[in-house]
Image (cartoon, rainbow, N blue to C red):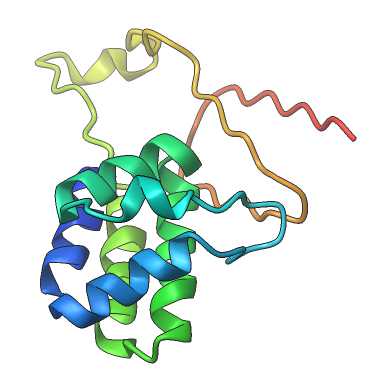
Length: 141
């Protein structure tokens, strides 16, 4: 499942007052090194617009992390746990291209663009388990 759909589904399950509280938290400093979204950008935002703004501002992984933190702070443990488990379940579930030739699994086409992960100060990067092939990691301090 796409992160945008997962976030939107989570926002849609919140009662209106909880959704408004979540938007308030988004305009605060939720995580260290994570810039808040200006309140004016969220004031009349729908759930769809809020999910898009979160992904545009934080990126997919950090948007989930911020949402989980806010839901925890709001004591919305049901939606928080569901988001965490569905996100964790979907991470390694990147569909592999189906091939009629099972003997040429190492000759799979490389991804069209390299993945880029940006972590802010004191962030944690969680990578899926499994065979990934070549992996280059650059750490800038």
